[in-house]
Amino acid sequence: VWPSLARTRKQQRVLVTTTNSYNLAASLFTCLFAAFKLCGCNTSQQCAVCGLYCACLSLESMHRPLPVMAKGRGSLPRHPVAPNEMPPPAMGKAPWARGSPDKERREVGEGEDEGGLMEELYVPKDKGVYTPLTWEGFFDEKLTLAVGHDSFNAYAKGKSGPLMVLLHGGGYSGLSWAPLMEKMTGQECTFLAYDCRGHGETTTSNDYALSEEQQICDCEGVIEAFLQVKGRVDEQRPDIHLVGHSMGGAIAGKAGGKKRIKGLKGCIVIDVVEGTALSSLQFMHTVLSKRPADFSSLSEAIQWNVATGAVKSSEAARVSVPGMLKEEGGKWKWRIDLTQTERHWKGWFEGLSEAFLSCPGSRLLLLAGTDRLDKPLTIGQMQGKFQMVTLPACGHVLQEDNPAGVAKALHRYLERTRPIDLSHLKHA
Image (cartoon, rainbow, N blue to C red):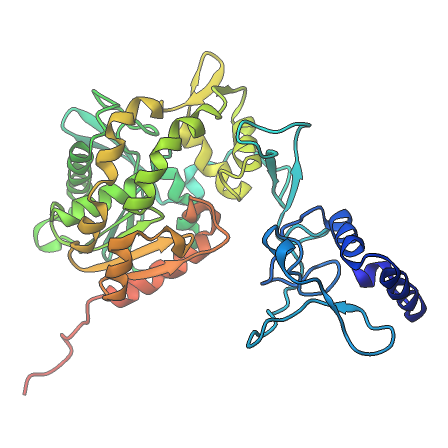
């Protein structure tokens, strides 16, 4: 605040003299709060406006000692540094500062919402492009796989190498993996992303039979049907790796833990942890109730998902959101009513941590933050039972918010798990 209010040495001396003439505490905090309005800057960041290491803008810091005066004529106040504490590293510019390259936020409405906080609307940096995209630019082919009397819609990329089966989260579709597929290049690998029962373009006799056991059976059936179509059975059967996000991550972990997938060599779970998921279920109805019932067009639906921060990238939303909707009566409505799946929610996540830790082969957990680990996984990580990669600044859908980061993690995973070819070695 001080440099912005006093830019010349003379102005600085006048300001310091004036401040010392009044109550320093009242003057300083009035100045700070008027300029920043509790912007949220904390001790780990350098303020983008005043250039000082701000410990004065959070509620906790109001109880800290007041800034002390540095020695020297006309010096500006500096924030006190605790003994044995190094000043935090400077940052380029706070995300909330004007002209931030990351993102901007603005307040909507005059009052407060039900939770007592002003609603924030996420304003993406890539504004204005909300036309839907199709699967063709991301996958090689689209298939219909028959599993019993049901037909599963699927998308595939690649023709050789290990098979990575991609399971999407509840309410999404196989197109949720499209942004990731755009980044997965240069790998000898086959990717299969299918629409789960009740999602996307899959048609079944009972779209709401989404129990853990039924979804594992569906996963088995889809894999076998795909390998039959591609002629990769028996001796030609590839190594299989399950990759699941949210609900799909729970099914991948459970299927791996129960050893239900033949030839399974590894499991990758994206942003789902048993303890965190179970504690969040009580808020699901509130989250779902805030979604619009329908949209007048796909572009409007894409714009809503980006504006609310459900998906942080409009490019990802343009291909993934259409798979979440269906046209009905001239409106675009959600493909599945997730509230009708409530009876299955606990079953998806209970026992997930132990199941994941018992999966055969390699295990990888991708999270948006380490704070989401529960006790069993924290212990498992300390014991080296799985690899964990965190991708900060992401929402829940990591493969859409940061496809490049997820692709990098998968590239390393594939390199680490690739079988070593010893055929060229000669026996003595």
